Length: 181
Image (cartoon, rainbow, N blue to C red; front, side):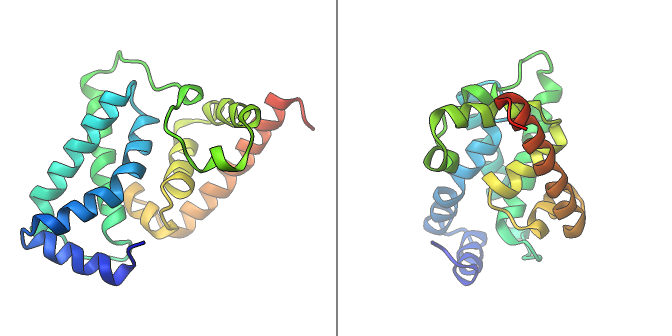
């Protein structure tokens, strides 16, 4: 695991054009970025293309990166979010990825059984786009409230409140799917 001090050093090296540092950053970020993109795009290929485009943009802008509160993770998610939004504007007729058909294994696979995981995915799909994005950034992406706030243009307190409400709605949808009360 790369800590914040190491990340700052890696980012300085990457900004100075050292490809080895950029490769470490890329390998560290790719799985979470891909997972985020896959949930928003119609295929693995589209998600991979979006992450690749985001990383190219990040590399192009690395020399102007300045470390602000949430650091490199929020910066990369922000770039990827813009790439995904641009993709939706240029290809609006493509269907969204089906969260129930997510082939990227995640933390939920280790925690809940396959049946419950299916119920969670159905409940997650019932959330609106804003709730899904908050939960993906915070839970799936592992961003802090501050980092997610930088990506979304919100204050960290608003992100925590939105996350709390989204979890409540997810719980309600899950109970509806499972017939629980």
